[in-house]
Length: 168
Image (spheres, rainbow, N blue to C red):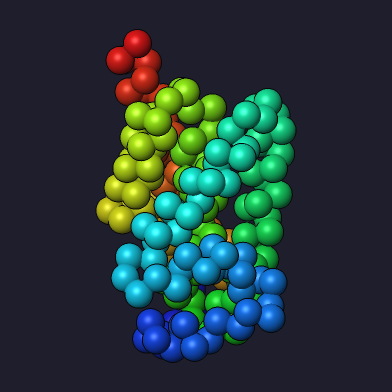
């Protein structure tokens, strides 16, 4: 079980954001995680421009960039959570960035599929069915912050491609 850390009040998280620290900018999704409500949804929305930049890349390059973004995210989320004294503050949304990018890997072209991927990812991320909830409870640190969203992204990716195959 991950160590118990006292919950952080949202205003305290915003007060804990240090714009001088690169890892805070990354973990807070370039500031999108500072939204006063639904920071996970705002973080996921803020990931869309990054997806649009990466989408034209060949699959191998997309996956390589995604792997780097995940590794950077583990580091940034871990350091930021420790700075804030919280295991997984809601304002840390780089995990949503990574989860959405996993979901939209090799997505069919068109805004309908991007929207479907967004909705599927948010659904899995919010509901956290097994094994996503199991991972969230069992893994701690920066990897723990990231892993449940990566699993939600994989589940959403599978559903998105299944829906596309059935619809084709």
